[in-house]
Structures are given as C-alpha cells and as structure tokens.
Length: 321
Image 1: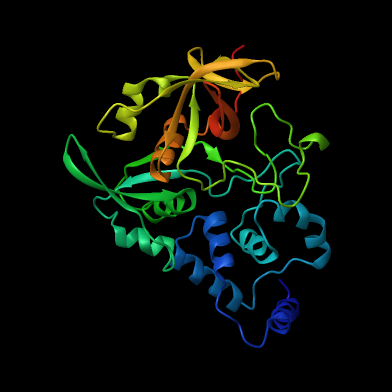
Image 2: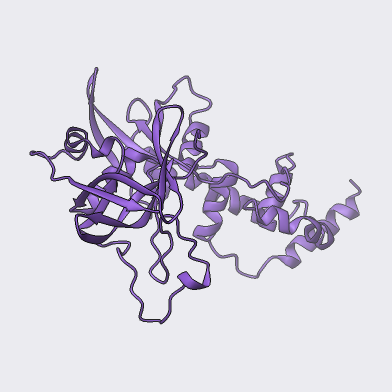
C-alpha cells in the first residue's frame, strides 16, 4: 500500500474515533461472543484492540449501506463486520428465508480437568450466574454446569489447542409456554386473530394466566398414566387424575408412535385425564418431559358437568396422519 494512502487511512480512523473511548457495552461483548466464539474476557480484549488499531481497514458508507440490512439480521453491526473482515473472513449474507442461528439451545458440561465453574464464570462474564448441578452416574458423584450455545462455543474455542475434550450433552428444550395476558392466544383450535375472538374490553381477563398456580392440565398420552406422572414429578402417592375431555382437538401420531394433539374442528372431542398442577416446579418438569415438540396452549377442560379453564400440550411439528 502507498505510504500516503496508509497515513491517510490512519488519520481518518483517528478523526472518526470519539475523544473518549468508553468500555465496551454488555450488548457489544455478547455480540462478539456470539459471532466469533470468544470468551467474555477475550471479547473485551478483542474489542479494545480493534478500536485502538488506527491502521485498521474501514469499510465505506456506501459499502455498509448495501449490506447493512442483511448483516444486522444476522447479528452484526458495522464494527463487528469490520472485525470479521480483518480476520480474513467474509460473512455469509443470508437470503430472506435464512437466519443466523444465534445462542440457541442449552447444554450440560461435566466439571472435570480444566473445565471448572471458575472457567465457566470467566467465559460467561461477571454478571452471569453459573448453574452448577450434581449428578450420580457410573463413576459416582459428578458436577455439571449448564451452558447456553454461546458459552459452549467459547469453551470449545478455549480448549481447542489442548488435548482435553470436554464432555458436553445437549439438553432437550422444554415445551414453550407463552400465554398472552391481552388475548386468548394461544388456545386450542382457536384463531385468536379473528374479530370474534378478540378482546371486547380492556378489562377482559384471560385464564389461566402465565404464572397462575395451581393450574389444571389436560393429559391425553403417557402423562395420563398415574405411574408415569408419579415417577416424573417425584410424588409420594398416586396422583388424582380425573376423567376429562377437551373440544377442538384431534389426536394424531408423530415418529410412528407418539401421540400428538393438534387443532381440529369445534365438534371434535378428545378424551383423557385432568390433573391440577400445584407448582411451577411441577409444571417445568412436565414441560421438560414433553420437550419442544409441543407447546402449552389454553383449553377448556370438561370434568363431569364442570368446565375448567386450563392448559394442554399441543404438537408443533408435522403429524404422521
């Protein structure tokens, strides 16, 4: 590169830098961890080095204007994009139907060798709480830390130049539960966007609420078996299950054997059992049992002559039939 061109670039970088450079924000640190697989401390160092390098190459405003929308949808800002280019890499610009997977999933890593809670804390950052669990296996009692995808990638990157291979297992994601407080969404077989299903007044109350306990659930598969329910919730006695039904759903299967409740017509009836879930902990255990193949939706549970506002697990995939 021509000497005068290099000096001009340095002068431009200095001119465009703020008079006082603030410490990187938590948002920026998280972005660099996610995009580049850095640990928390490494991300801070890389950002500070990048910002202090007055000889770095900057993209033009015209260049950024052309790629900005698509790159921002993948998690980049202008600074992160310039850093990516400085590493000799060109981000893949996704099409409209593609998105960059960022930070999805939860993982268990076994605490052993160089993998310690202190290392996980370093990778996670000072403001994050590290979850440490104890388990009993063939080798006796062991400790595990729960990681998100970003920290898992940072850990693998941290150990890349060592002979140690961490023991990492992906955890199944629980069934989603997002009950709206301002509408009936989500409700079995009900399109809550239609005018007749929208709230009539601002005072309308939609039950059950997101954090309401105890809460009634309708079971139609293995959870309707008292032994399965007792074992999974760690109950000391047999649970009280009531014969029940719901309208608006039909039963299908997926993977050739698992039951799947999906939306049906208003006259469709599914028979099963009703159970009153006492605590959030029990509900969380049920959601983990069903996994992200299902979601929690509202329904009206018919128990004898009673109609009880409750919840059930609706299948979110593609059923077999």
